[in-house]
Structure formats: C-alpha cells, structure tokens
Image (tube, rainbow, N blue to C red; front, side, top):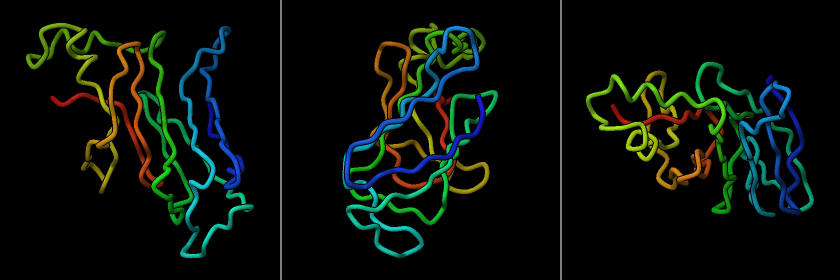
Length: 151
C-alpha cells in the first residue's frame, strides 16, 4: 500500500478505498464525504463545481493516515475515514496492557486520534469502534491520524 493522490469533487459525494497489498485486496481505509464538503484551499473558497487534489499517505506500522494539502478546509460535512483491521489488526497488544481485561475490551476502546503537534494527540470526537473490526471518525482537517486506544 502506498501513497495515493486524487481529485476530490465538491459537487458530488465521493469515496476512495485504500487496499492492503495482498492477494485478497483487503480493505485498509474507506475515505468518503458528501457533496459540498470542501470549503477552501489556502484561504480561497472552493466552488461547488471545483475539485481539489489531495494526497493520502498510509502510516506504516500502524493504522492511520496523513492527509494533505495542509491548507484544505472542510465544511461541517467533513470526510469520514473508516479503518478496517479485520485481517491485519493485532489486538494482542492488550495481553500485556494492564488497562484492558481482554482483547475485546481493548478493541472497544479503539478510536481515531489526530496529531495536534508532534507527539501530542487528541481523540477525534466523532470517532468510534463499530463492533466489526473497524474504527470510524470524521476528519476535521488535513494532518496525521491514527487508530489507537488510551493506555
């Protein structure tokens, strides 16, 4: 799985799937948004019929992404990221964590986090574990996101 760039249209709903590099095309990320989700780019309004080129860089070794360009702003109809870890997620980390009694409890604590400054993370308020080996959250702005549970 590698970095990908594509144009996001502002006049219609869009979705983009990122897949693991395996023989099964296993889902890694489903990124989508409704029409009208793009507000501005570098303080210039994005018109209803405009598109903006974005880049999505998966975060290797974790479930996460870095979304750019940095100057992109979204409306209240922000993009949604759903990370699927059904096949490759390693919940065994819960075995050594005193905070969680089981792998299931650890999975339920997973959420999407946004890096506010290098090394400092804030939980995405709309983030949730969906009960089916996936975590979903709405992206408020470009930047780095990871799926993690509090320690």
